[in-house]
Length: 184
Length: 53
Figure 1 (tube, one colour):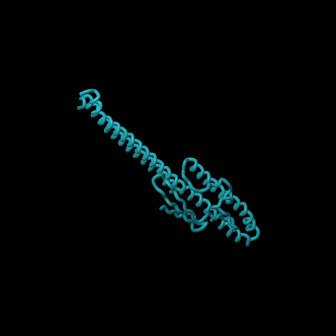
Figure 2 (spheres, each protein chain N blue to C red):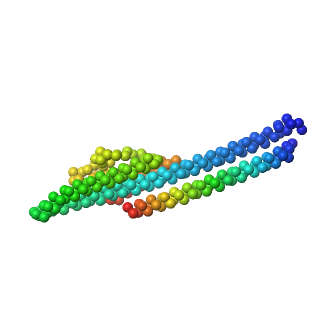
Figure 3 (cartoon, rainbow over the protein chains, first blue to last red):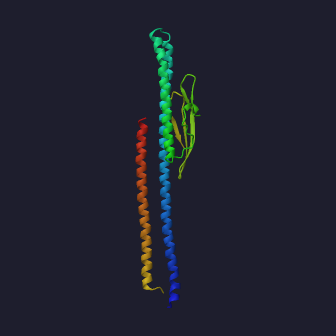
């Protein structure tokens, strides 16, 4: 057999090897892509979980203080009926109330800081973060009786490379401390 | 007709590809298992912190 004929016979074998090498490369690439998608999916799920914890914690802190503010107001009204110590108690309540309101602000700031930190770490969060006093946020509003009303329900779409979630929470009143979460 | 040397090279090439494919499969399966374990650990930690709320 001449050299040229031999090369012609061996060409399909070279092509086959080349094809198999390409398949091997593709396999590695697909696995790499799958792995990075799975990692991102896990990361976003952890973000969702953290988000749920931060929101639950915030609402709990704000609403526990709401309960204190509401009961404090009742106590103040009763104390006003008793001149002397009762009036003194009622006057002190104003200071306590201010401190409680500051504590609500602090809870809000803590949560916003956590949300921001999550967002900077790559969590896909589709809502605004207000690094301002909460009166400027559209989710919070201080009522006439000094308690804070948090938006009563919120739903958000949460996307990961592998799945889409619809997350919803509800709050029955501004004195309720546990959020009802639903995940679809 | 292919030369015996080429036949040997071809068979060893195919074997290397097969072994390479198995190696890739095994490496990524291990890596993904370890990712899942890491995720589950972090998830459990978050569950614990949620319970302590």
